[in-house]
Image 1 (cartoon, rainbow, N blue to C red):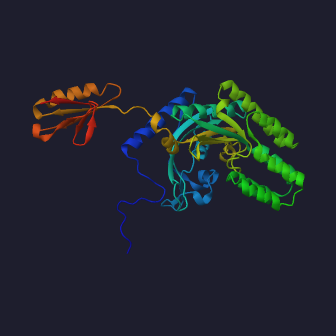
Image 2 (image 1 turned 180 degrees about the horizontal axis):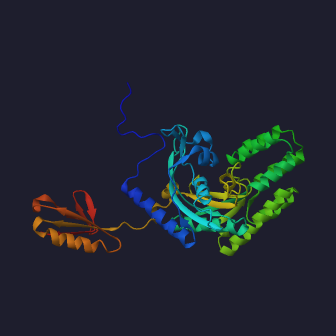
Image 3 (image 1 turned 45 degrees about the vertical axis):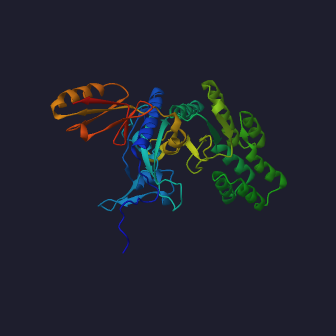
Length: 398
């Protein structure tokens, strides 16, 4: 018989103690406020969705969905992203809302994981969706907002890598016509950042030296706007050319926003190529080896819900941002303890009520029966310790 679970938790989930919650809520508040200033209104969708609609439409692999049955036998899923639920709302409750529609969110996300360290089965995302605008202006807007949101969250040093799914699709179609399996294998290598594997796959495809050299040169297409010109010379495919032109337009708008210094073009970066239809991007914080934000264009999703429309957006990985923004969070509140006896209860509560209206003050109250009930230790920095807890001030009503 297995030992009863007492303090253990399922793999991939965690508890958040008060200090961590304070950091999380601070990031959430600052980022959502930033998004609101850009015209994005917050939306909340259910934790549970139908598998046959939102579950199937999501970008998450089926094996990574948490599924359960309701009492009628209908398959439900815990939401694995926010994009598909928002597409459902835009196509139903907001079907009469004119485009473009700008929405923001902060939600917990659930994805089943393998038994491996460092992966979360439940995590938080804060993001936006801009629906109903296919222009390069809208793509640049969400990238510029991603930059502003990372700064609002307290991430000081970061870089956003910007790519385009259409360029790679066009290039591979031109170089490997009719070889869908080979194209997918190369995309899988790029998606996993396996550049050694990418080169090995090229060697196995039996290409001419010139064709292999052209496809290998893709790995060097990373940098500033000069990459657009280099990419245009690499292929004559119409889709690839159109995609690079769109990317150049995005870059010009980002320069107008004044944020191009935070962005680099990386044509090896394609995101989930089965989901995104255009530009795609990821944001990396200094000294952190995984993305703190990601996004892109997905023009085919809304059609699955009966309201075809172009769309673009991004999500911040709020849990990961907590790891790199610790020193940039707001100062701890000014914590006060009011100590009172029964005879002075009303006076103590009246003072506590007034003090709680002041910004940045946290006020606790405690009933004591005599001086022997409690002891204040004044520390060198003028803070006070009462039974192991720190306060900036202790007020007595005795």
